[in-house]
View 1: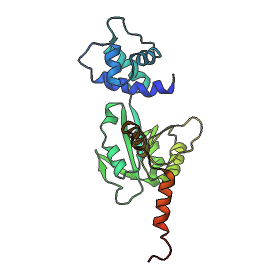
View 2: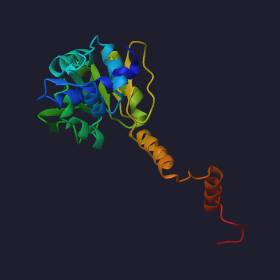
View 3: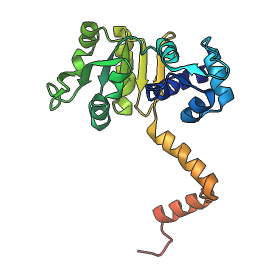
View 4: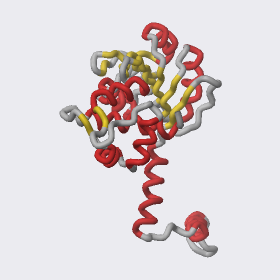
Length: 227
């Protein structure tokens, strides 16, 4: 199944979960709610073997189960979260994990001030015990929300402990062995992409790189004779 299709399936599932009072939904309605074209929706769902019924649409309950089985929400996945700073705390408090089949079973951080603090009843464990946390909980997914310089070391330890999938929020690219899957979430990058589209939408010209360089140099190196 194409990667782009896999990435859209959770979106379809979210929309279907919001349609729990409907028995059927047309491809047009589902596509509009998911932000794709009806043709794209039908192509994606055909990869699952689901074609709907002409003039009726898709059976909501059946399609929800079908997609849920593919994206793993039909079972529970244990997750260990490493790095309980501002972002990590927000992730630990995110209820969406639980509603989609993911159960946070371990919270890990090196800060002595945080070790032992509980979030939703789960105590934060010291980073030195990361491998033990993975072994005790059976976690198969790791979420990294550490500073960039610590992320690779954490990833290496997670992989060595048996974690085979990593969601990386750190601002760095991770090197992992074949067979380990990594998804990177870079919030700054996503904002820059939105800024690009805003430039195009409003017609605001991007700053001239040469002008920026000149301005920067004049700030750092004042003209001779000034004090």
